[in-house]
Image (cartoon, rainbow over all chains, first blue to last red):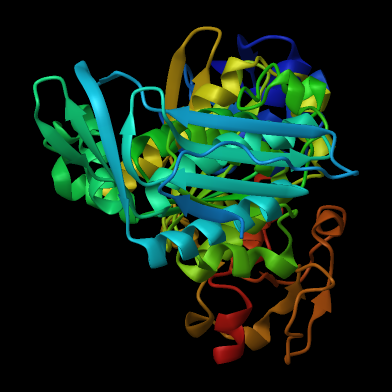
Length: 80
Length: 468
């Protein structure tokens, strides 16, 4: 099990109802973990539309999830 | 004759029009002081042939621009005393607003465009020519931009680069409320405004270019009035249209920098594509509730489509109308957009390899490095393949482009919409192809993240396949 921090932006934050949380998970990869978040919190976007950044870099869904990571979840934003 | 010169005292002339309800008369008179000095009289000298033709053109432009029933200007030349009338501007229009605005606009334009020189005689006995037109324009510019030109990064050369710059604002709403005043104030020479919308009451909390009295009027036209008040010499071009596939190239090709002020993802992606195609830098920003995103896209650099190649319908991600937005959020993001454009024109570093996320609740800014699809590809994933390094015959070829995308592949293939690719089983080695390699990359990354092993993405998309 790994414990990670998740920061939500824009519509994801709106749907999740909070900006930051910590979770403990058995997921192996970033992609698997994001899918469980989508299902658990009804985030309303497919995984392909949520970009994940760790340490100021975008990462692929195949990247292994590391203990203590901070995942920044970024959806597309339309407003202007 | 709509514009005339007179060496005798002048006064307003009677104008009547049955369809006009608003008549405005402006009289400019000689006052007894100028820039702190006491004035006892002045003299106007015109270059008559040119003044008459330029003046006539100006009044005709005002009639056309404001839809007036009539407009007239009479300008004095020769010696004038304190209290004498120097200029009379008369406008007549169906409604008072156009008449007032046209009158002010004519006066603003007159001194820049019509060659009439003023010689002031001061109480000290000294007389000086006060020069309009180009000379006055550069004197005014020197003063207007003095604080900015003081910066070593700007200087007279930087200021001249700004004066030569042509900037297109696509979408004149909340983001433009920040970007437009900052861009015009910086001294850019030409501003293009694209927006088909009218001002609505629900816009005003964030779109502070507009006044309550502007409701129901064209946004581009009201924004142009705002811009010209700030800097009458600015050249403004108005396009009261919605940006679309059919007009995007034509609109964008006339400008050096493109600023995205739209509130639709599909329009943002269209701008992104066309700017890449035409080699124009784009500064794009988006807002949501208390948050803003910003990035600059250089031709050939990481672009918006590298981040979000397949946008969902706008309603999935929340527009201002659906999710709400704090008024200052788009304004400040717009100011940051102007900052990017100004830096870009001055040759200073811009945010062309990062995405800025700004949280207005905490004032925390986060930047995330962006990579272009070619950089992503060179990341060395074994499943992101180059057409020259594989045996194509050993793959099942699947084209995931939209049905309207051409050209059709010449090799045997299946065409499957992306959404369906997630549902199907991929038993044989499968190579996914899209236009650029971006969508296929994301799809395969996703599928592999779900444990699908036999799937591959073609680098560079269709073109690389057909070239082979």
